Length: 213
Ligand SMILES: [Fe+2]
View 1 (cartoon, rainbow, N blue to C red):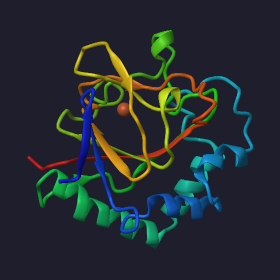
View 2 (cartoon, rainbow, N blue to C red):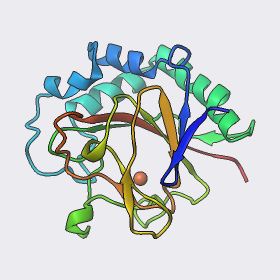
View 3 (cartoon, rainbow, N blue to C red):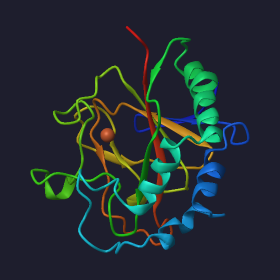
View 4 (cartoon, helix red, strand yellow):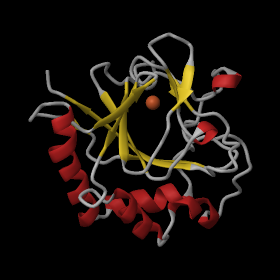
């Protein structure tokens, strides 16, 4: 009932941004009226090495988000729990659901990637993985949902394998007000170095959920 389109194996759904004001809450967290300006307030040098698996969530922006969340952020927690209960559970057509207690926050800065890689990764697919790969260890039954907090395309988005082992990839079309679902356990996904000039970066939250077996 919320499905807008299905493209390259990814399902895009609309949600009510008044009922679930994720963007507004994150804007307030950073004191920004536009999240597209978020990279301008970061102190780090953004043109350094690509992020690794160890440091991709260690910037001052990630720390600010998680510190607020971990010290109790009742407005956010209420919206997040409501989203799982009233929206995601309807999408999955279940009343029982196991979900990530807090979402993963991702930012892709200009000239960098959002999810870092390891030294053994292929140069042209640095950080690309399936969530079920060794080291990531997520069960195949897990459902992945991404909530874009900025409109993002091309190299400011996530490249997702069109079907398991197809080895063809399409960047997700990220629009505020939509949430999308993809088979992250079976389809490889990752970022390319962000070279967009129109879409400066990606800001998003990832949620994983599954139905108890
Ligand atoms: Fe992943």
